[in-house]
Image 1 (cartoon, one colour):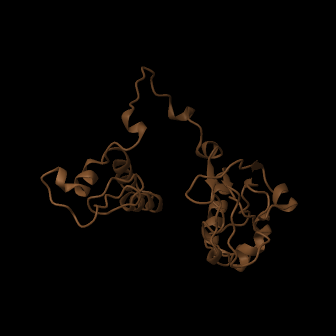
Image 2 (image 1 turned 30 degrees about the horizontal axis):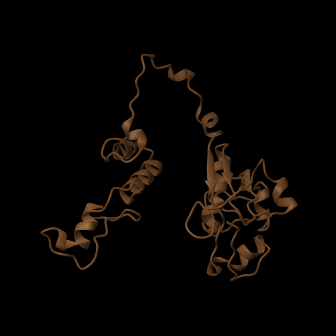
Image 3 (image 1 turned 90 degrees about the vertical axis):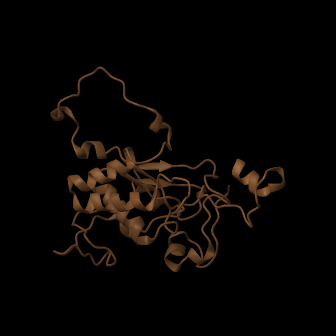
Length: 237
């Protein structure tokens, strides 16, 4: 704040005025000289490497970036464990699948995410026993059926644009949003949910909540939302 004030009113201090205010990257990541962002390209690369290589050293690099090599940026950075209890035996820790069964994704609608990304999240979270969230906007009924047409290399005629599939995979989102109750909310959609998420109020992002610009409303998305291609879709705020 003081830096902005100084640049705006140089006559108050012995300083020269800049032609424009410095961009310090408060809202958008800046590579050189900007404010630290918890989610940044280096962290993303380290995470992808750790997941794909499945090597302890790759994970250690990711852990180091997230725990040791960053400035204080969240409340938990100010906390430390203080306990006199002894660690429990590893044998008493829940198995991975049991822990993952409590995982749940945030609501991200088709259109905000690409079709491929939205479907892969559904397949992946269902594999580990968690709950993916459809976001508002309906869901392709094709996703309500478990796959039984996957070949030996992971391809399915039902989802020809995806790879790495398995027979028995399911892309249906266990948590389905109702939101405004108009975009793609049908009886078929509702009965294929394990949990319904009813959005009482919008406003989590700038502008209208649940807004999908017209250019993003393709024929496929319009068919799922019972709308018309190219027409902007806005849920009530």
